[in-house]
Length: 371
Image 1 (cartoon, rainbow, N blue to C red):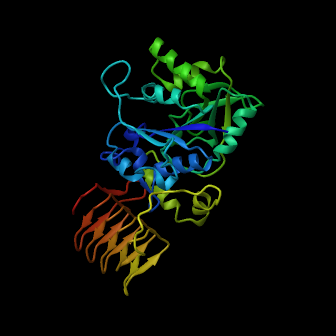
Image 2: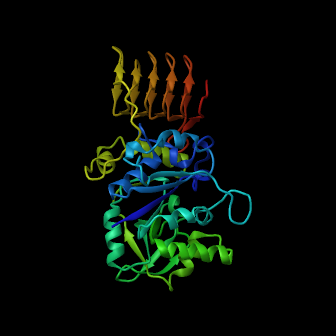
């Protein structure tokens, strides 16, 4: 089934401000060598979707550097492939769009130009594996106008802002709440939708003519009775990165084999990322490593325990890194102690520094910081 993919890269910037001051939420580093957008893109290309548009609003230099021409996802093509949309003024004024609906209106011409029957809309604020082929097949089998992917279970605080769906025995949505209730059993949307392309064009035209503003309220919620909207339950791994606490929690979750296998172990749904061809990690004679996720290109002279290290990290002699996340090109001096610390890219920690946070509030060092 032919479909067009559209990814929102900036929608969740404000939910994790520390990591999005100099990048989009889509380009937040995750799991040692990936970015959050890798999971959305990999889900899309695994479904043989070859036309993908990415909406960027601000701070998207790192996103463009990571994606390049799209060749690492087999999206560097003469016809179609990967398209990155720079920010447009909204249809109302010269200001930039501020939500999904305004973003979609700004690329209506792109949606109309592509001739695929369906459109897959995705946020990229999570690490997950979604079988979009199955979603598309069920969408067609149900003769649905819109399909919303959701998770069934007890609602955590991270899903409180997500739509809660009520469905009949056929899976058709008959009622919805704009927000999920924390602690209750809910069918919370994970902000991935499939919609018929021509219908989307009509809905966008209506939004312009009527001055509509919200994709959730005006497109989904207000059309539950008039459109055939179905739910699709996602039962696989879903790591929702919407706060620094969750960012730390879910990176640490990858130290468990069960989670690694669920996210990276399916040969039919590989997670692709930018290839850097780094040298293998070098371990010194005094190096000690326990239960850690370490990318290529690192140099380990000290001790690393229960930690995630991205490419190019250097751990000096006598240094002890515990329960920490060190992003790309972080350098520690000698006799440094780090516990529950998150360092952004290109951080330098000089000799004999002692830094410590806690599991719910890790100590964060911003990009290019020296301490």
